[in-house]
Length: 217
Image: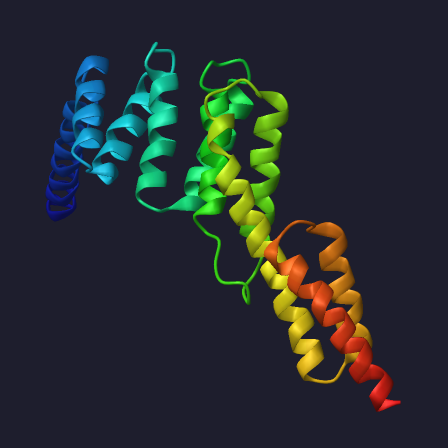
């Protein structure tokens, strides 16, 4: 019994120490956490920034800095190239604060988070599709925003990636002598991506595919 009592006291003391450490950690003021987060962010120490701003948001949810913390968490994830986490954080911010003045920036950053994930034309086109949709939404909702003015080259690059994917698939059909499928894919490219370099290539290859198709018959 005595051994059990001693063990209980030891566990209690250890728990007390842990609680004391937690209390000390939580004793940081709003200003201290803002300063810690800002300093870390400016220094490029984004993981530390996420921790400080997350603590601020969790411990002081009604602080006037809580909204800033939400935005800086998203920005930190973006700089860490954790784009899925960044998108989720930016989307949460837009959902929770739809009238905030930072919304045009937030939408732009969502688009950029998708844009940064665009891969080669033989890979998944979801990032290019999503970035294009988000940048177009920004232009529709906030046409006079300074961020809308930054989307032109990003939209062009997203379109080029999507058109490039269509051309890649159509060319594969052509190489494998699936001429009807190639022609339909080239025609789709010309119709949906007019003005792109890929659409011009597709026009030339439609005729090539038709000629090869007739020879096959």
